[in-house]
Length: 211
Ligand code: PRP
Image (cartoon, rainbow, N blue to C red; front, side, top):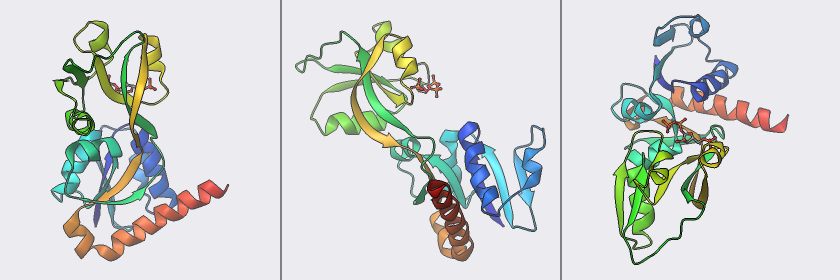
């Protein structure tokens, strides 16, 4: 049995559709219920829905053999796992944003509000920039508006949230997309099955691209 951690939400559902198309379906997953685990014994797959930022924890500790995680989460937590495939979905970017009229003064410590303190720290360390990280858990866009921070480091997908809050992207940090990840021990001992799934997903993605 291969245990697969999927991120709850739209990205997870889109990712599951690829598993299904590749022949690793689990029909009970479509039934309306609050169940979190779904199994197809015949196909040897067991799926479970977890909070998107928790996928890498399940995979790193081996509770899941493989999973679908955003590159943002992988960069932030640096889990000891393998990244096998870029699914090319859930595309967005990590960016620095601020009020339109924000004028950076490099002689001052920059106050950075973010859900991604490690990504932000890495980015500014490389510029030898002194920063003060303000770790928030959501609605990051509020921070510069209320003068809690000078800038934010956050996910930008359409840019709508920034725009509607009178902020604008100032610098791009990194492109983000969903990745197939694997536990290192599982990758060794369930290699054939994991490779089979990875190749199946890759095939569907290639077919979709050529359509
Ligand atoms: C994410 C991100 C931005 C928004 C960007 O928020 O933190 O707020 O999406 O998307 P957009 O560029 O398409 O507007 P999320 O929905 O995860 O909520 P939260 O961070 O406020 O919890």
